[in-house]
Image (cartoon, rainbow, N blue to C red):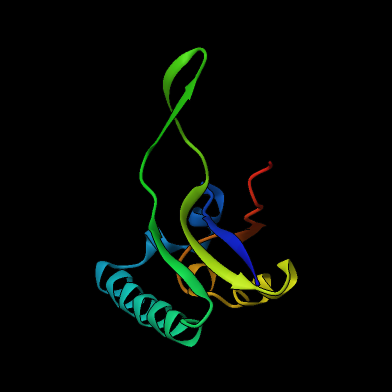
Length: 117
């Protein structure tokens, strides 16, 4: 089996379009609880192929030959899974709570390739 990195994406536009910020505090908390339960159920259903359940991601610093700078990107979290193919890995995330309950945008799945040499 191959390993795949799944990166949760969340854009400001998708967040705004979701109406999340217009929910009352009680509605947002209820939706959050529903999402947490659904995410837990997703993890439980896929525990045999999850290599690293991952975590939410915080603010980003970019280091380059120009130095260190604070930047924004759309990555909000990650998970590592095992699957026979990239398509099989992608299917694991169909209907995922990241975008079906929470105001996330999508999940991008990339194969973790072996180091050359």
